Length: 476
Image (cartoon, rainbow, N blue to C red; front, side, top):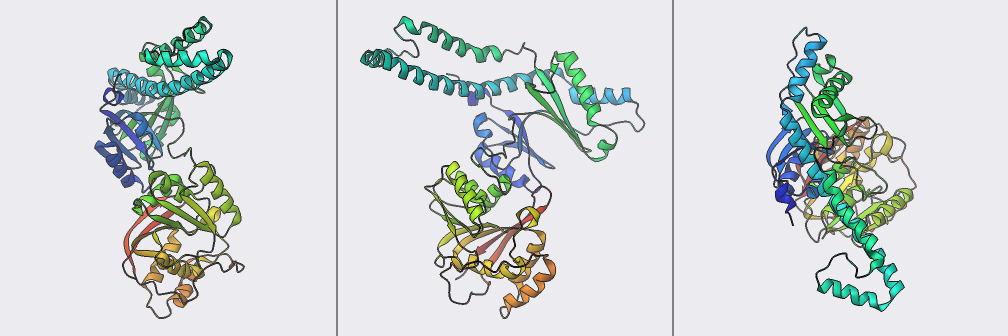
């Protein structure tokens, strides 16, 4: 059998990443894919890898994955060029050598064949099992004898019975179908997706680029334009400093997780938080405001030998989190509990890592006054975290300012002064005062003096930005 990983070696990819996620992508492709020739552009990472395509599609930090067709410097348009001149520059820069396009087409067909072959093989195996069950019921014990004899003879799908000649013939036709589909002489249907930014966006329209590129590909390669359901999509990124052409390798972004039923925090950011926590085998990881459980589920998918606990006071959020845990089949390693983050029912130094997205913004805001309760929440997080454990927080810029003030306050009057200053920085909604006391802690909370700052990163959350903070607990 052909070794697919060798067959598709030295493939050049690029992927898109949210603002602030570039280094996470570089670290992940280096560690998981043994990637080389890595190049970072704004919001994109280019890399080469010989790892099987199915493993490449399991990247967690990227938004979309592309087969790289062409990477070039910026378009050099004359200052007062007419439309004909602009079209000429577009053709020479974007089309270039046709051998690059035919080579990329062959690689794309091969990669699609690898995925489709695996899917078809699984479907044929399922169909074969169903046929064997029905056939076995009809002819009884003789079927089991034939099945054993077929295995001993090294046979695959042939039954020694004329009743299945048609079925065997259909299966043989299925086996040859992928090869026919991969034949490069079959013209592709395609469409162009273009994004212009910078000064180029003021001189070029995406419609103009798509029209010139589409006409050239149709004329020179014989491809057929299909805007509704194309076989292939050519994505073009044009910026002042570079231009990229690629073919998306998945219909949906990789950031759309198949194992999450109800989405919450952006999955790539949730994964990045788990990475910063440096989770090890046997760890107990806590999210004291877990919401629908996105961070813990991302962490559990990546770290198969760790355990996870989510707390929340909102019954609706816990219900959705419970559905997500069941949907991801993580019930044996992840548990949920209704409890307040200001008074957790956990012993001191009982968890190895704490990850938390403190609610903020219009969509994920809370009725709790975060300026007033944040010192209590941080104190509880530090209390339950063991020495040497990591604390990873996702905060708004306003809450980040409050966090800095809390951790730099003198020990006397820490909470009172932090609340007074934080109220000036954070616009909050009235406090929800009916949270039930569910914790085991009865003594005054200790000062926040043993959380050592490690790093702070700014990430895009879509319409707003968030700040990731990492701390390590140094003493009891």
